[in-house]
Length: 528
Image: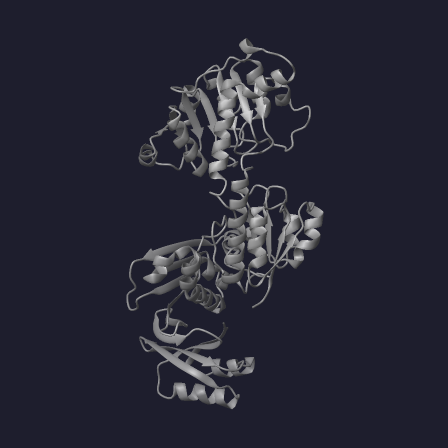
């Protein structure tokens, strides 16, 4: 077994380190606290990288990562990873989306309770030798309305616990249906309605273009006077300058923040000087239970991927578990070979690649197979190494539309993968299946039915269906010292398509000799 090297560049629980160090075929190096330059300098030696929030996996780091196959983030947020660049370079990015969920939800609720009862401020007052009972009058939360921005894993847990505290829960999430929200006992509303109705607002959404600055001046102007704001998700969703302004103007009664745009925030940050604001240093995931859980999960995910190609919780590629990964392997190989085959037929400007998976291939998932097809097809057109992760990005950059289709059953076989590459100049179609012994087979090419083995060198000859043609072609190959391992012929309207599996390279002059025959329409050597 080839040894894969994994670098851990942030502090990580011993539980996770033990997973890596005890795994067969894995060599782990623990070097927490590396700067971007230091990480870029050493990353070229590693197949895997495990990080938390401290390491920045930038384009510079990824450019130096010649061997890197996977980045594992112990936690949910991947904003410290340049995911598009990683994807283009074929690097899987994984996280642990549920490992921190309970801990982060509990922290958000703790912040809300502390904010409502002014517990941190009262503690600071007493430590200063004061007894200011009337100054720290709080408010009850029972019967109030909690507005949740984002109903992912953490948002749903917050909602569940909040209902136990007798809060009325409403939420906004653009990808949650009314039916699902109703099942959770949550009122689904627009952001405008959430801002107008909520006594407390807590944020549990990712930082994307649509959420950046979501809680800003316009939002604060719509909110109930005296609303309390909690953000334990991502810095930047709340406009910090606008929040400070809203608190000073008494439109917002207070805020509790665990995250900031810049971490740590500057000493003169406007929110740090406001008595109405509670702050914690990004502690949402900071419990011993959560740190052990995410460390164990991400290290096991990295081990599984590097040792058996099992993909779990990937950000940029469909997740495929251990058993499913084993079942998918022959179809991924089939898809790659079909893509390579079409990529080596006569050149044309391709604008669309359509992949249809039928039978078991469709049941297992068209997306991984489609990505394998793209990697095979684009292999001869790109200078850098390409794989199923980077291929969709390369296709998009070349203006190729990708269609993936699932069909319940195949027509002639129990399972098939059919690939069509088309453009203004025409189209090519290849259909494959998995043979009885698990090898990829070609069962159709450009309208011809076949039963050929996909692999090695294949001479594709399009010729007239006439007596003696096969013998003449065989003679030319024999004269050139080329052994024919297999031959399959498909017939269609007086024409024949023959696939000659050959054991040796076919010299260019031999190909030209074959193409010069009156009965031969085209000759192409395919290398798989």
